[in-house]
Length: 253
Image (cartoon, rainbow, N blue to C red; front, side, top):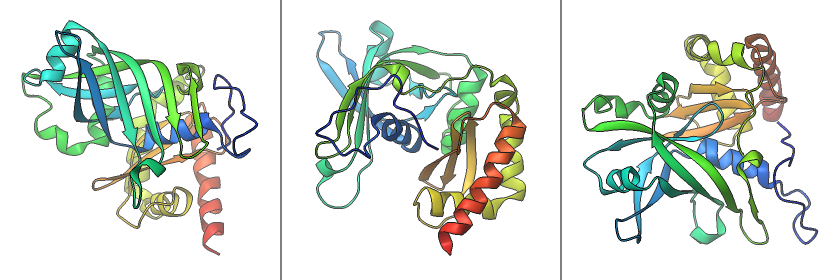
């Protein structure tokens, strides 16, 4: 998918002309499943911990937190927080892309948030219903991308979040789309992950869909593939998924 830079920072002529901060930020947000969460202690000091993460339809981070954890108590007092999503890889860790989000987090009772988090992090089903656990949604306020040397940008949430307007039919059909793809199109899911997202071979399954793309999981691995264009209905999604299979098969030839 070609993602416009609308809402993102203006182009810096000193940077690589192929560098699209909005697109790279969206990829990191949707593809990474673990984040460093920074909260504020009662004395106002930063407190950083590691947490699992998923995204809501619009890309807002979803967290599952225990009341026994220090970071949960910090958020109950002051919802201001920051999340760091780092891609990682071989070699110098500072050479790999990472995304920092400034946000405000609050508990959510949304069934969608719960379903999308557990689809992305299925092992969490073992403890998600424990009485001390609750789901939280982080409202993004500012974005900082460090995509490597000379590939940095700062912008607002409008350049990162997904537009959901007019996509009610797609969102209502998400569970059916995901179930159908997982039951009948395992080969296509593997092609998407391995040929379009550059992921390693695995038993890939769909975990979520939104107007901009499809989220995939394979064990502890995750991947994100973007639709060729924004979709709003199940029919749009089907057409995009068919086109992506042809694209992926072409990449193998």
